[in-house]
Image (cartoon, rainbow, N blue to C red):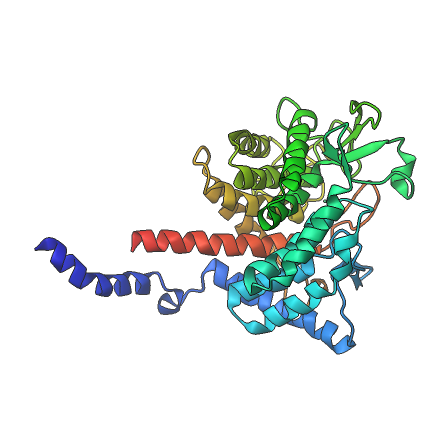
Length: 408
Ligand code: GLY
């Protein structure tokens, strides 16, 4: 009798509960909606400029007050197309899908790139999101080809993918033989995906080898990370433990730690191996318990940066960590990862970090750093800070929706 009553009343109750939680009825705009509206406004200005130019441009940051556009071979070229896809996913507006496809397909040649390791970022954020959201099967071929290109950098003697070449640029001046950076964990998703699409387990095998070696050599006992591990190509031994973008070899570069948290979360998603989950959780515990983590959850550019508390923050590291924590919250309740992620993106969405419409080169977030030791991209917007902020918003939106449904 009671059950029958509930079944009859359920649709009405659902309506009442959802109306109670509906920002339109309460007159308040919720955090996610407000940030989506802002992103639409800001990136509409950004894309209008590009479309007016008649070229396909790829904005990365601002340099001396001007938007800096990058070429497809730059490691960050996938983020702006990826942000188009997230805007499509967040709004359902097909304008963003068309732009996503256009800017993604401008990266077509990247699938053959073999001179650095970043094809995972570049192709995953662009073609990977494009495949997920448009279902364009031709994008699968690009992803698989990119995975083949990345696999050429596998060095079996050391069991890792070489990050940087050492025959030119500043990397040639450091005495390295086979440098691997913690960031490289982010390229493994491409390899896992390629195995899913082809059934060829060699990509998966390389990804697992790399994740295991990185776990062995890149982490200190407190689960902080070295940025660069330089391997011997003769016997695979570790030659150097260095930094490139951090303050010192023995310091902890904030974005490197963010890549570690995110990278091992993905490695766990793709393999189900609990060691990777532990690694992601321990890497985040280092951040969460660090006395130098500011109250707003947005890290200084290095946990040991000189001049703390006046050192610069890195909003990009914060956005990466927040996005990873939303995913981690779906795998573990050991820590309240979701509350941590909410706290971080609330900070990023506040006036302290979020730009005003039309300023900041039409990027969303202010106050990121590219590389302080290279005096490059210091306290600027960066396209990857925006990308991971949008991804975090999407993940928050999904999780909030699940909670609302459960409560309803
Ligand atoms: N992957 C390069 C960086 O995080 O700066």
